[in-house]
Length: 478
Image (cartoon, rainbow, N blue to C red; front, side):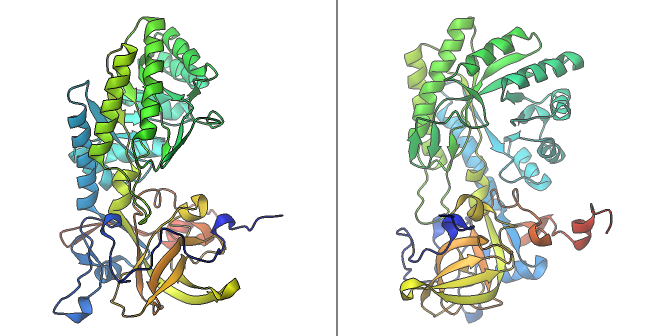
């Protein structure tokens, strides 16, 4: 039997178990919205009741200035999350060898956002020459940059080493020789880490200990590649091995999976140190800390994560008889995700009756999978709210869809929206700060939205909306 092209996103009937019918369809569920977001309940001006505000501006004011769709970043929320991660890891690891937070640029990066990170003292990890250039222009010093990636070019590596980035995370045996060749030619002595695949894959509350070597990242511990990589790095006099690194997954909601990862990484560190009579001063534990996209998500916060990881590492290193290394972690989504919303204008609204008499309201917006591919790509869950007015209509189970020529063009699979939602209404989708702009496209020749930051009633355009000239700039026949 062939599957539907939209896969698991094809219409399935009733709402998921975690989605409850709201008592008030206008209410905001605080944990999934930026810190400054709110809807007035009772105000003197009735027209303002129920209108979403963020960063001191109403969504109508934002839409009037930059149009829709638009990515909106609550600067206060973003920076407070970044500062909280930095502070909590510094506190939790202060009695050990310390810890640093490296913001994962892949989640969301602009020159302006890099400037915030530079001002707030965070380091950054990048995965390409493009990301490297953006963070440099934002004021991040090379000494605070880690370079990741599974297929780095000679050009990217040479630039990183010439700049003197803090660390290059090597992903394969071939890359060891590549970095060594370039380092010898340029007279550089880059500090490196080896990314290791340790047989743990974490997804929210699950960890599965089989079949994780069959993926593109890292050097496998199981097949001996990791230890072979250590030996090869040590054979090259230009390379300075600073430690090992792992990343076990995304949307990890508690610290249990990290306990298993830390145990295996401590064991591997001890093995390397004993076999080669050296001390590895640093350990990279990756990121993947979860965020609440819906009411069905309940992730741990920075303090709980930091305390859990510090406790696990201290215990495991003591058991292995080795010194506790300095730790780096790489949150991206956990900082950027909840700080962002996407603002849309509603177009077509279509009730669709399914088998058994069940009706779903299809609410089309002026964006879609070009500005948020995650629902179509991963089956990701999102929430939404009517943002531009108060409604007295009852809640209706709805699906928010885009304007693209794909049945899988879905932004929000399941949400209760007011039954009177109509063309011209503004709709807001929270927790879109991470991996929406980063993974956006021009599918159907749609121009990508702007990114704006809001704070204290002021709007700043970080990245302007693409123009038609932008869209055609590379078309030599245009």
